[in-house]
Image 1 (spheres, rainbow, N blue to C red):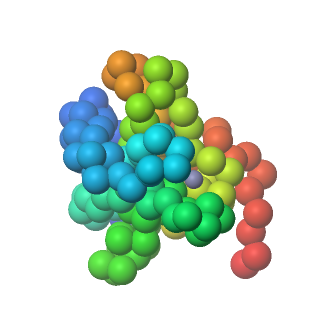
Image 2: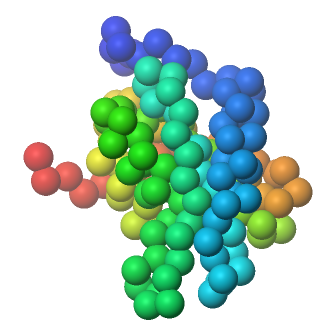
Length: 142
Ligand SMILES: [Zn+2]
């Protein structure tokens, strides 16, 4: 069921716009340890776009994924509802968000308005799913 705030409809134009923004962020990825640069672009329910890249650390466990950095930028700007997120990698296959990022996406995307996830390979191949596809039976505390 659509709610009154749910105005956006996912289109190829939005997919292209988010992919372009994610590619721009990927260019700034800090990934000297994995050599696996990732870029992400979040579109909020209001239509604003925020980007992030993966930021690694010599203490590997401190690494933060591109998706979570993009979401943090969105939250810092006061946007708490993800409409869609594109993730681009340099892999020749479609690499989807990791489990940690899936849970964080769920925090800002309700099950009845699931965020659209676009996972893009280096050759441009893209898979479009929802967060409900990627993390069914999500954990909820509230
Ligand atoms: Zn992740």
